[in-house]
Image 1: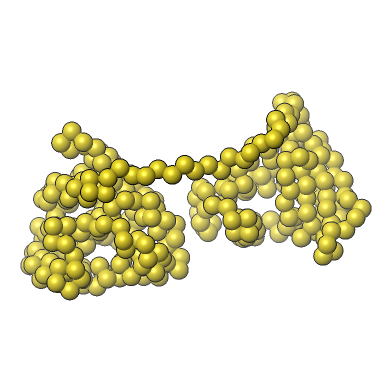
Image 2: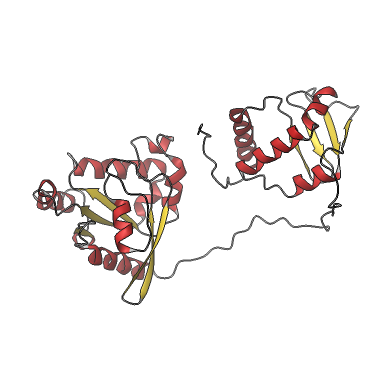
Length: 304
């Protein structure tokens, strides 16, 4: 309830959800600030709970977003019973998640200066942060997101820090595979319920077995699936269920822990537990085992 969404709405054309209760923001909101013939992108990141570095609250899901920002604008709620304690708690969460986050330059805005309960303590908070916490007084501002007071000064301070940092270094990154052959093309009229299950007569090390699925339609679906997305994996699991492939695998003797191969597309470890929790756990374990970065809304699934 510090006023992050209100501030974003004031300095940009973004219209995030604004309400008079804590943790209104559930997803990051981006806003482009156009001022003095220059644009700057601000991200309203959901508020953090103590223990966020351990996944409490929205936890890791949005601490990762903070890692991608070049400058952190730390908004303090001036009406809080302990603004200084709030500042220290957030600094600690950043350090526990990744100490490198504290190396990012910060601009601090003491919000709600228009209210008596906030304005009366501004000088005390400012003095403490400068003298005890070593905050640069040139990066500490009283603001009112509602009235717009101090907002231009905050934007100017953020831009000065960005100018000091210089242009961002963009490292080339790709998840593309070095293909040695042209991917197989499948007939568009192929039916998803036309497939064959072929068990390998030889057991794998550890006693598990290998099963082959052959079918143009299901192989095409697997080829088009991005396995780094949990949502894509859920969709593929539904395809296996509605096509009858899961039932055919069980009838062929496939059990949890057995390996299932999809032609030339790839393979996966079979799990007969089809609950969302089991699917998520298996996907997460596979991503960590392969050292792959997770993509999409890859947080613990919650009922709606």
